[in-house]
Picture 1 (cartoon, rainbow, N blue to C red):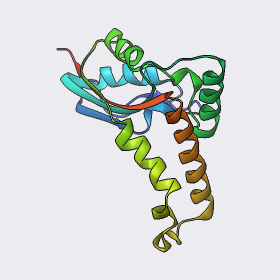
Picture 2: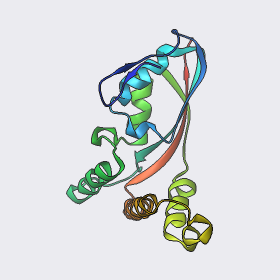
Picture 3: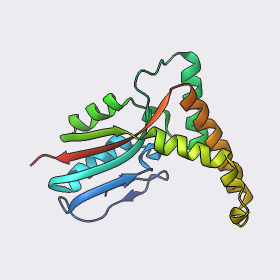
Length: 169
């Protein structure tokens, strides 16, 4: 794919139309230029190619008042997510469609992924002695991340989506 990293270096691989499937699993929310990345993915996909994404989104029916936006800004800072990347699932689908993708499937899996992660980081399993070899800094960051995700989920602000989009012929 072709995109610009945080140090503004250009990265390219392969020729146009050379991939049948491109997966962006649990990473796209960090992309500085996510829309440009999806446009590049579209260019790299062969006709009828598939873009598979799992990404954080603003929850359906979220009420975005001042406090909610402050929570999202805090999450952006802690999780290294550009604030502009917070989209509703409908806005996300519309953005992909405007680029030429045909979004065939979009499904919430926030209960399984986000709630499961929070349970893991806040629960006794995470304190299991078999994890003693893990660096303490990672453990602390994971606990903070889990706590913040739980706060966002309790406020019905975020969800986790799986999206499957096809490049039209």
